[in-house]
Length: 482
Image (cartoon, rainbow, N blue to C red; front, side):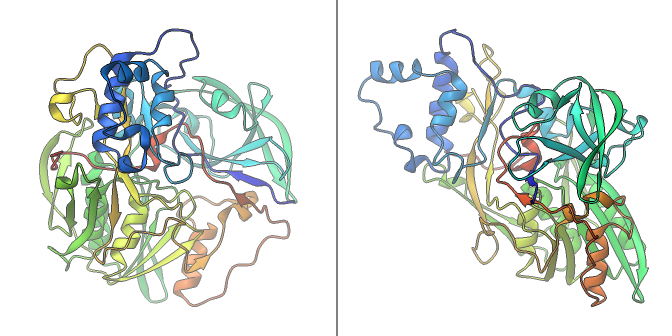
């Protein structure tokens, strides 16, 4: 049987307990709920499609007050989402915007390994975790964990789809290790103990140059469009340019998205001759339509600190390429999909891997600060720290087409999880997606599967330990004029 795959998963659960779980009997916070309804009524992309957000929803103040008392804050928020879980799979709420800001900036309490989750069999609720990559100078690296390692238990408990979020959310955990042999999971009877520390992840994970096919092929593993790392991204592109690369393989397999502007910057760096032309159009709801805007290909960029305060500017490095190879999986989402979709009208973009996630809409952070139309911490209500990250805009390319909601279909379809029993380090020519991309460039055939492939059926993402790893959002100074 094919084991099902539980991609770590995108939107609704945080390691930092960002999302409130109000299980107690305390009364709802009218102040927080008033913020939620008014800000959603003003900004929510599908506001006109949600009867509970209608401007005429309440006939009297008493009616509105009763509504605010009807639900706990998190339950109220999710009840206001349009076709929640289908059309809107992406909006979320937090009870502490300080943790939200850190998560946006790639700062979190973490073991230092990025992992995926897979069901052991099609009809089972038991899952395993596999290491996608390990961050340097972290507990995971010190413990010797590496890409492809597999864990099946935490603190002696078998991982299941009902306990994994609690177990992986612990600050200290002992991982029971396993392996895949002949397509079956084997318990190694080995344990590795890890304690979380504060980790700040540089999304520019790896740059490398390969001399193949009488060409110099640049390779960049980029794991998040984080605006506070714009200069690191620019430096990586500058390094590849200095090596005289003729082609670029951009590895976005684990890149769930990030800042729209950073996506436009990377598109500008890859090309170089499109300055002033349209990268993407953003469209808001009818109340916030004055914020509809266009991002262009640029020659210069802005720098930001970890709080996304603008700190300066820089000159973009350019590769001047007219063709790009992009590695994807179903974890490739939002701003990553935007980059692919918005470059396609201008250059030849070839996609190798599996179908992307399919997220064509984006968000902003909303605080309880009515004087700024809820978009700034200036003047924020100090009686609570709730904030929201609802969908507020849709994105299209220069031809006014959105990226497919079903995801971007690769030109060369291959699922790396079929090779889970033989993962190679990222950047190694043995890595199946990189090897397949080289085969594609050199016009060779598809690699041969192992005798016992670990096949998987990808499930719809539902819950994750870090919602900001699959976002498309706006930061810095931009028009906000509802």
